Picture: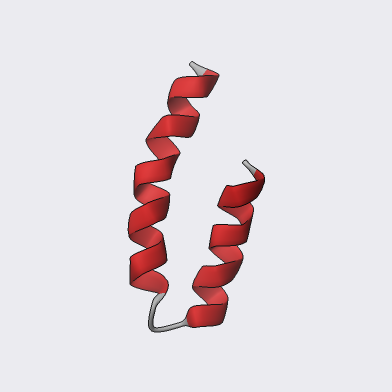
Length: 37
């Protein structure tokens, strides 16, 4: 989960490259949901 928070920070810092990070987050979120389930 800590990695997810760092990814969010990178989104705000990179700016234009936020799209790339968002794609990674979208793929990472389902993994977290699976763990919680």
